[in-house]
Image 1 (cartoon, helix red, strand yellow):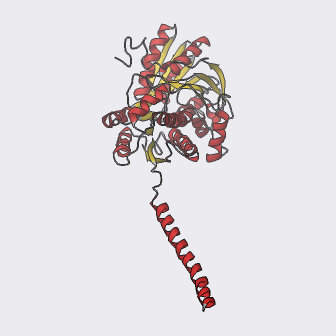
Image 2: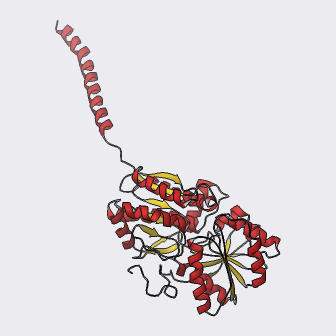
Image 3: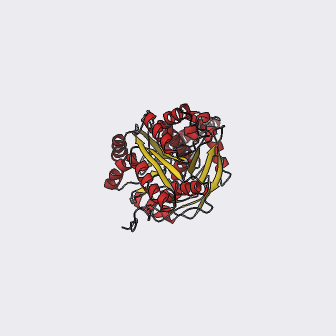
Length: 409
């Protein structure tokens, strides 16, 4: 009987152990299932994916997503993954404003990266100010604006158009023809340029505008021929540039015969247009793919690895990338995604050393950065022919054109 009882216990103990194990696994399973996953941080990415500006903006969207991917690979921000919510501004300022409001009100993003034309930025500005959100704007512009709800990483006039004028005058190009798309950036940029051209001993040989997306330059080219300029300062935007350079070449004035200094043609546009069409022309930016500074080569390699070895990168793209990285650093410093806290932290960040070299946001929420003049080569890359030296302090208001105006007034 004793053996029989012992045998019974031997059968019961494994069963009891199995039941205990099953119970523990159930409890652990419930505990694991109940542990909340990190809630993603939603950010808006708002660029023209269609329309006349898509030639420029799709690649900025891609660079923005590259930065987000790299941050997520390292654990995101504040221990939370970053979730991009992508919208198409469709090259229409009204659509930009509508999509900005959707991102803030319906998608509940904590910040937005995007915009290209000043018309799109001006349309979005009241939305961000109304909701006290924060826009990171990556493109060069005309200045004359200091909104507390926008971080301006693109060049101010004293960081792009005025360095270009300085270089042109040093090269003996005193007769300057101004050509632009008919909206706020080209008109204000040229207003500033006209003041400085005359002040510095140059001559405004002519000034013409075409509608954004315009393709007929026959009348403009006739006026250029009559004006005999030394150089054309080109503030055309989008695919109007394709028509302009084609028609200039057909009229016997390719860049090799009539120098053109562009402010919205970079590597991406040159690639889309065909480098042969614009080879020999000039551009002024704060970044070129060919630069050997900071972590630029790593940035270029990472972009090509993600989007294709035949891809190129340019100034607005690297600014879009930098904006995400600066936002993440500011969020980390603030310990919060609150726009007001992030804004304060962003201007308090130390000097950074990245794909653009040494950069920092000033108290006016614009970026310290160098200026470079490059000449486009047949392979679609720019050869740097002039640079500013130290990073230039951003000045939103040109004092020669708008004396006494500042971000405080």
